[in-house]
Amino acid sequence: MTPSQREVDVLVIGGGLGGSSTALLLARARPDLRIVVVERTEHFDRKVGEATVEVSGYFLAHVLGLFKTLSHQHLFKHGLRYYFSDGQGRSLAEMTEVGAVTQPSLASFQLDRSLLDETVLEHARQAGAEVLRPAKVKRVEHGWPTSEIEVESDDSTETLRARWIIDASGRQAFLARRKQLLVELDGHRTSAMWGRWRGTLDLDRTQPPLPRLKTSRLLATNHFAGHGWWAWVIPLANGDTSIGLVWDTKLFAPPPASTTEARYRDFLASHDGLREVVAGAELIEGDFTLRERLAYRSTQYADRGWALIGDAAAFLDPYYSPGLDHVAMSVTATTNLVLEDVRDRCDDALDAKLALHNERFVRSTTRWYDALYRDKYELFGDAELTAAAFAIDTAMYYLGVVQPVYRDPGELGIPTLGREGWKASLAFKVLRFVNRRLVRLARNRRARGTYGRRNVGWRWMVSDFGSAKLRLTSAHRKGLGLWLAAEWHDFAARFLRTRQPVDARAAEARAS
Image (cartoon, one colour):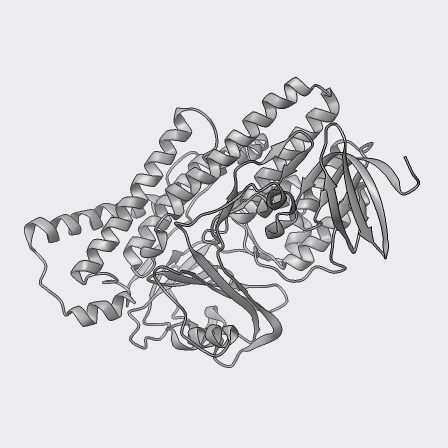
């Protein structure tokens, strides 16, 4: 071994939240491990993934132990909230609103990701991980039990010999692309553009008061939605607001303009509710991003000596903020793999664990897409159908994912719908059936001109959407009622002829 070479146990590509949390958990569990994190940036830029949900909130607060940091430097999230319109120049006060009247019983957060990523990386450094920054991986020669990684930093290059390489490089997907493992989801062609704004509307001050409202509209992840698209409005602790548009390219396109940023601005200025949010506000200079073809997955997550976590392995859709849940689960499962390997040093046992790891994560991404996101954007212009899907999806999430994690944190290592056995299979089939029925109802409504029939003047307000108890909440039961009522209306319209025909042009205007 030359002076430019050295031995390490684990090399992590990428120092963002996925990579730094992996290094932190490994260093805490085994302080003797030689862990190196290679991060290409000198300072983290802002990124999306600003909203957590209950599982990722649990991972950050309780597994990583960041509750104090999250409480002081970030915002508590007050659930999800939706706004709908018929597109006829409605004010926020006129638009349909869907949301909870009480604060969530389980903590989740609105994050300044650049600040959080810096915090977790510093915790990993303090726990004993070495951080090379700014630095980048130039070459990888994978082998077992040792791989060689050429790292360039400060105008110098060194070769590290590592037993494990953990790829946390995000959408760069350093290893998956080189191993040709990535598959785009052609059936789910979504794109997104986003930026941060200063001086946006305070939704708590301008919306009409509700007698029973005990939560903050401003602190929610607010959604504005239409057929084929949805937009997020997320508050940040420093007073800025993250606003993004996501659309299914088969169903919708932002307005044409000379630049992409102009298309983004024109979209916000032309849609009900959003125009009020950004009226008088300022888009922060240089803080705008377009990303096309969002959805992809890897056909494999790990093998002897390497593993993928987070966005380096898969990304399905930002709706419901699942990205950080995927980070939490893949980090937990991967650290378990590495710790068991360095403890046992048994290749036969490792091969069996790798096979199960790959099987679960590939099954999870395949099922999660098929049950939750396939054709989902066809619902978003109809308040009733979106509210029903939201309540039912949330019920399944609490019963099948949140409750097991709060009961046993070890469940974090098993990805959503990825477990083998009849229970996970049944949950997948039920969720897929309900969402496919809702999509069929949306198509039928558009054909009849009743799509979006309650997009103005309707307030669907419910109590807390869930808890760590194994039960359906009243919100979930109301969501089931919405779905069944929609099924009845569809049946009546098809066979009982109870509906009068509507003007086709007016119906199309509502639908778009």
